[in-house]
Structures are given as structure tokens and as C-alpha cells.
Length: 212
Image (cartoon, rainbow, N blue to C red; front, side):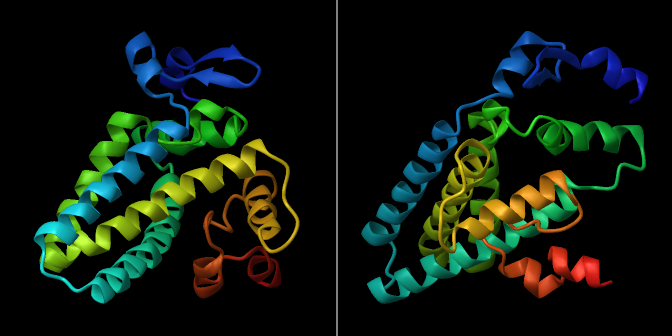
């Protein structure tokens, strides 16, 4: 670990770690998962209300775009996890960035206060995506974005549960198993948390890596 990281990162206890020297930054870097989930669901509800009340889009098309938004989120989730959270740490700055946004979670996966982005960052990211989709889709973004945000909220809940509660029976058990492999066996595979779909499409399942 480089000297800057050693100086700035201090142990808090056996299950967590301090990553900012500033008490304020350290505090706002932590959150209970329920807070960003509520933010995203309220955000989605507000945009959906605006879409129904002020945007002339049929109910059927609204539902279609919302489902499309949900599907697109799973793709965004996969790629952000793979290429941003697991960015190559070729420089000290990249190493520091990767550790703050995701590395500390891999080191302390049971730290429940770092299983989701803090509220301020959650609102910023949601607004950024809304601006991007508004530019691409125009008024259809008001129908698309609620599905995207519901997908985001679902991802946060699933990510929290796979770390905090025992795996269930049935098909959902696969999500727990995949994420456990990603954390404890091979961090270069199984980037999809809420869905394994894109790991199959892009060939990043554990089986595909073993076979290569």
C-alpha cells in the first residue's frame, strides 16, 4: 500500500475502515442502504408523475419505456462495476480512486454502511443519468427514467441482502453464489449483481474463465 494510503486510511474496528482524514468526509461517505433506496424510489415516483401529468405519452408506451429503462440499468450496472469499480490501478491516483469507490468494499464486504453510495452522491448520479437520457430520448426520458431508478433501487437492495442475510432457496440463490465467487474467489468475473445476464453475454462467468 502506498504511503499516502497508509497515512490517510486508519482502522476503525475489525469490520470497517476509515478512508478519509476529514471526519465530515468520513461521515458522509457512509449510509444505511435504505436512504438511497428511498431517494431513488421517490425520484422515480416524481418523474413518473410528471410523465403521466404533463407528457403526452400513452400508458402502454410509458410502461414499455419503463421496462426498457430497467433493462438498460442492468447493463449500466454491469459495465460500471467492471470498468469503473475495477479500473486498472496503474497509477497512485487510480489506485486511490479504485480503493475509495470499491476496493474498501472488497476488503470489508460486511461493512453495511458502505454497501451503497451516500445520499448526496446518489442524487448527483441519478440527476446525471436523467440529464443524459433526457438528451438522448427527449420527453421519453420521463417514462424511461423511473424504470432505470427502480432498477437502481433493486440493485442496492439485492447487494445489501447478498452481504447481510443468508442465501435463499430457489433461483435467487444464484445471485448470492455469484457475488460470493466475485468477492472471495475471483474478482475478475461475475460483475452483475442484480442479474447474471450480461456476464453470460460478455463471457465473464466463472465457468467461462476456468475453461479459458
